[in-house]
Length: 133
Image (cartoon, rainbow, N blue to C red; front, side, top):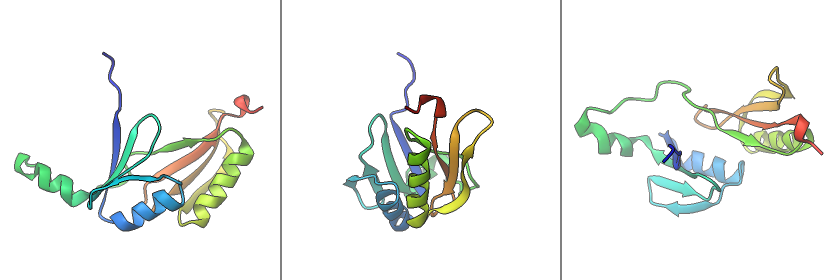
């Protein structure tokens, strides 16, 4: 059986603000709220936020309790057209995302804009212009 990602969990020390951001700016609906761990509805792969202290508590006996150490991943959100990317970028940044780079044509052919969530994780909104109708 091929390897498949079943869950993406973002660790945070700022759960309340991150939940508000992913719910209000990125329009994820909360599926389960277990206090320090919140899972959202997400088609294709489960998506959650978890307080960093919980993972540290669960893994400290195994010697793992590392602090946050910079930007380590990126989430990409695909849209169907440049207009949709522009509207999404404007809406997301209006609801608290830090604008990193406004949407523009990338050397690899996509139309992409970058923003950061409240913890500083950089994500993107993009479209494949060749797929626009």
